Length: 91
Length: 256
Image (cartoon, rainbow over all chains, first blue to last red; front, top):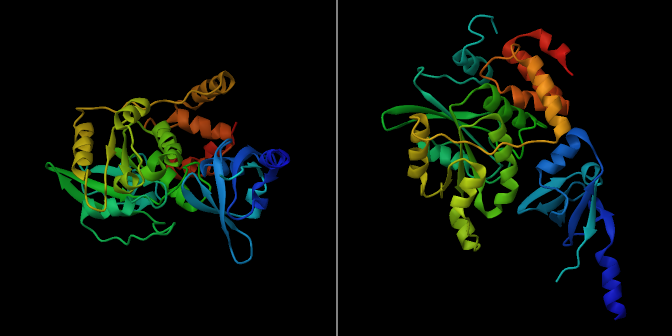
């Protein structure tokens, strides 16, 4: 029971996309930026409720590659920190 | 760029896009699509050229062109750089956008990756907002099949309002269907009627107001609704392109 609660807590955890660890999956909640940079993220497929997974880090840890709707796309921290995601518990 | 022939499509193709049309009858087809969906593969298949294909993004930065013949008609095929969007954020996107918007291709083929169709449809909708003559080519059908993905072509066709052709460009499967569809559109036998996006009332009211002001300023061949929407977006690069193409410095000042 305790453990379920624990997962429940993790499930609802919100973080910015740049903090999503490698191999973890999350659901996009909202985007913080506006204008062209927001448009860019939306065009790449980061639309609220879409699923995103951190694939791997570049040697310096920036940019980070994400799997967004079936394509691997690298984003810089500058961009990914504008994406608020909810961590998903993996099956 | 001189002033003469500015309004003619051919000179525009020549100057801005470095494309040489052999004759007026030649039909210009643009190949657009997300990166790595097989645009260049289809291009090579149709033209018999051997443009470099490779599995990395940004390979086609400048557009490549080739010709082919189908049912006694000459076609000029333009391979555009792969983009996720044509709301220009980068040079490639600007090239693709300017060509589709200002180069007036007779037909635009949007190539999509059937294994991740959803992310490709964004671009499809953006392109159908500019031009009606769009054919959707669902490429990589073999890979989709391997992944157990089944696409309801008829339903997709119905909701998008444009022809949808499944292909495997690598093996040339479906390419004949694609050519036949293009031929039908060129001959006026069929006419795509793409689904048109309607925005909020407030935006639509603004669009109407600006569009009325724009009419007469823009060339008829340009899509005033689309340009209006970009102006509302505050997209500066579109103003730059319009200015270059129409050679009219007054456009910049008309930003709303």
